[in-house]
Image (cartoon, rainbow, N blue to C red; front, side, top):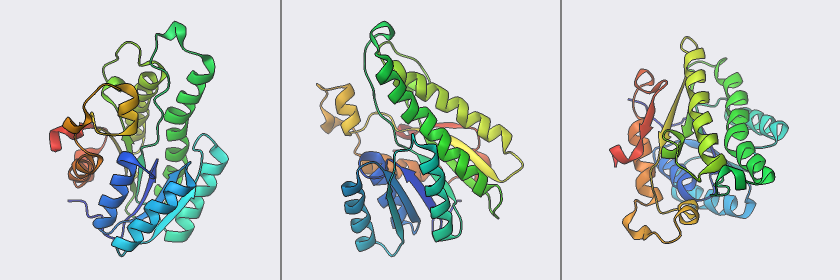
Length: 240
């Protein structure tokens, strides 16, 4: 079983929602963290809370993952500080518009694809370069979505980007079978988050799992050995 103690985990979108819950859950297991988000104030707050509660180190940096150069520098800084990078969780995403494709604005399309797909690629790309050269390899985890596996009307660039992320995960898994680096995806399912509220404004979120419950399901999955994870798509709801 995978042990998080003393591992170095980079989480994008780590300042709130499932990303922040994952950060706290992994810190409780002894993982050191590199947290990325665009909101510097929220990052400072979650970093302070984690350091206060757990005996781990946290590096928190405001970063727009659509900027490949900035992502490269950040990954380099993470490895320089901790000496290695054991896991990446590609969690950052935006919902975009929920309209038919013919009504989708090109500007919003580009923003959503750039964040959800290009950003995940940049982080994975530069992390892979570090992981392939270190003992013990590494793990690249993609936070997926049910609409990235079974398309639904009016989910636009979000659904397309998550569909593409599943393909990116599979390619990384195939290409690195002999390198010690593995890749998988996890669909959190519906959870009481701000993004879910945007998608379903009239939904009663009290009936949904909390981000903390979803994070514990992620940990159950990620405790599995590498061979049980590589190239697979998981549903967190099955592990609540």
